[in-house]
Image 1 (cartoon, rainbow, N blue to C red):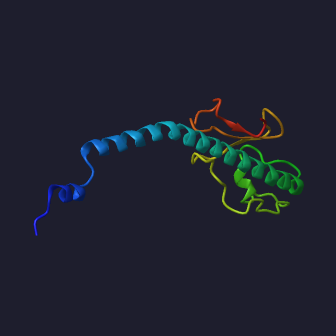
Image 2 (cartoon, rainbow, N blue to C red):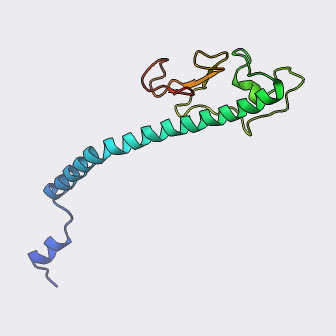
Image 3 (tube, rainbow, N blue to C red):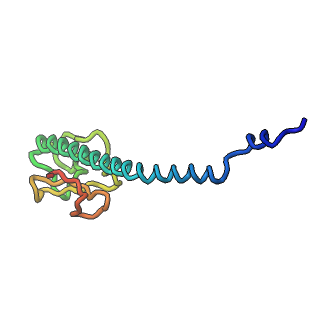
Length: 139
């Protein structure tokens, strides 16, 4: 049986022009939606850091209640999960190992702090101390 040209044309795939149009449309969508998704992701990481700092603050209050003071800067947040050698320590005060910030770095801790009894902070996405993206216990 002999096929006509119309049957053969319907069996062919997309033309190069059709593929280019689809790729351009996908590129435009990515250009419009991409920044919004990135902003949501960045704000989500900030929120995670704030929640983790609140968790540290609660654990520090329990530590202070048992020991009578906050851990020193040299003892650090590590003293919330391992006894730094204090007889009145009743921890661990955190249920897991020390969490890292959403960017994969350890939280900074100092006591006495510049803004209160202690300061806990993440240096944020840029990893530099003092930037606008720092997440702090005193803000």
